[in-house]
Length: 467
Image 1 (tube, rainbow, N blue to C red):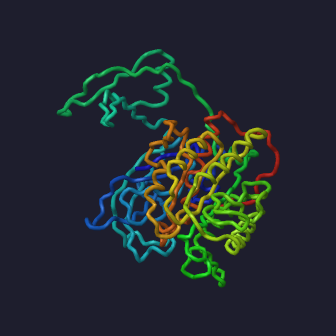
Image 2 (tube, rainbow, N blue to C red):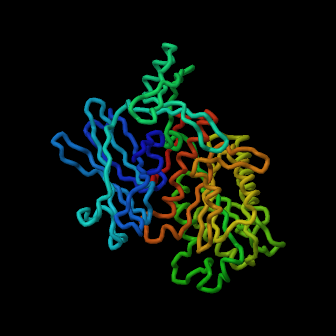
Image 3 (cartoon, one colour):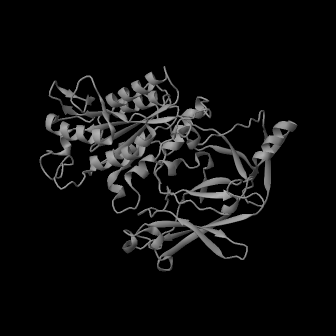
């Protein structure tokens, strides 16, 4: 039920995810290794067959006396029987003792949704199940081999349980490990072949913080939807309405939530800010125009600069359409590509905020596939009540990479999409949901290019590392 992602250790906490840090054996912290855990469940059984559960996971350490010591709790995810919690647990690994962990899942009653999870009385929640495991350097690996079929129904050729140490031994001794399948009766194993390891390479896996604390930057860019479907900005019903009381609209919430996190990892805090789908004062409908009104200059200073340029653009730009993502993605990719001519320590994050269904889906896919080779991630926030099914195509969370119209496959997944309405009543912010995958996307690019942290970097790290 759980997954260990120690290679992005600290990454999600550093960029604002809700991750409690549990220290086990803190007196030895200077010599112990920290291991990060993220958990997900699949196919939970709701107690009410007509409704889905609202699961919360609680992590415990099983002490030597058998008692359970609570280490922390995840957020509550509403109406989901296969949740992926973004709360990260960081635990000190101690080689000399066996550390048994237990994860329990509860269905939280709706009356508890708006209170801190640590104050929820677990005795008043429905228990859904639990899993236990031991922290170990030699966690078992299960390797399955299949005969590929175009139909998608691949035939299993065999399976074996092994470990990293065993794989190294196979390579060193130039021998094979048997692959078995279960007989139809399940009574015996049938030998189907052998697995051979031709080469074993051990490489240092640098963490997200190894890069960020040694001179690497995250450069923020934002693109805002100015299509007519947002409604007249002068009217309170509009998604672009600027409330005189100071209450932020959905666009402002996304800008502030993500921008205030990422600005700490950008040395000059100068951010390109664009709009799309609006008729600008100096021309026709544009699908990538500078928010500050200058045809030449796109950068603004800080999150405050984005907010000011956005408010000014609402007075100077006529809402139009259609909704096209391709031009702003191409522009962001151009900036990311140009940066490689002078530096490899910059990574770009484009935030797109939109209220509608895109009309250039294939062009957008083509642009994303092309950009997947560049130091760029794309965060998309959906505001309002539109049908965002097509956005899930762009966010390749099902493991299937995007394919362009020419048949080119994306090098990696660079998109994260979050509909803001799904977070209403949830304790997870839009920034936490959007930034969940960013450390992994950052690392996938750096590792694919064999770019290593510059440990000789001596400049001061950012003062604020948000928790």
